[in-house]
Amino acid sequence: MTHYLTTQISQHGYVAVFVLMLFESACIPIPSEVIMLFGGALAGGLLAAGGHAQVNLVGIGLAGAVGNLAGALIAYGVGRAGGRPLLERYGRFLLVRSEHLDRSEAFFARRGDVAVLVGRVLPVVRTFISLPAGVAEMPVGRFSIFTLVGSLPWTFALAGVGYAVAANWDSVASAFTYVSVAIGVLAVVVIAWWLIKRMRERRVDGSSLARPR
Image 1 (cartoon, one colour):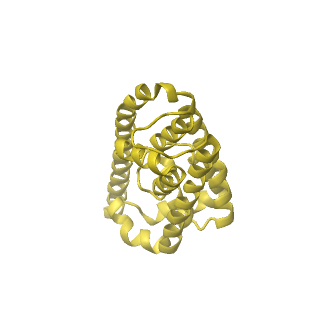
Image 2: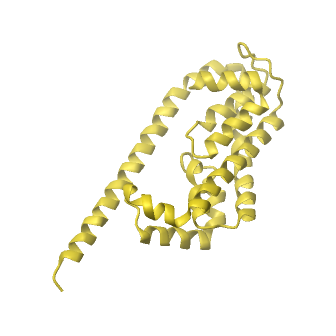
């Protein structure tokens, strides 16, 4: 995947960065680290094979942030349109219960701004934070502002690092495999922990209901 992403960016520049970051923010797990680092390296003078896009650091950072916002709005719209009925209908397959939805909606009512803002700079979380925001019906204006504000430091920081290491890009690229594996393992561990926790809660609830009153 890394080769495909870098090829698209080297050929299509800002457009590729925008589209790929849109996908990443719309809950498609494309590594934004690769996108933004390579975009920054390209702006820093990296000569990519087969590429001809002329880009600069500011343009790459803005393209990534705006792509993030566009993708986040798509995921937000799905969550808001499907809403609670959609999750109540299909949530049982993920062991999501009504009380979990109650907590989610209450959380976003109290701290939605902070959740969206901070979530934009957290790996894995940043990809999926828009769905619960939509389900909780966070005002779209506030959601958009905090998504964009949270995305700008992420995209510019990664692009800046890529710009700085452009001369040593081959060494940086070789580390992507290890980073991707680490993130994948972390995601699996978190999901497994969450599923086990939900299964235990359901067993406890089932035992409580089964007891004679």
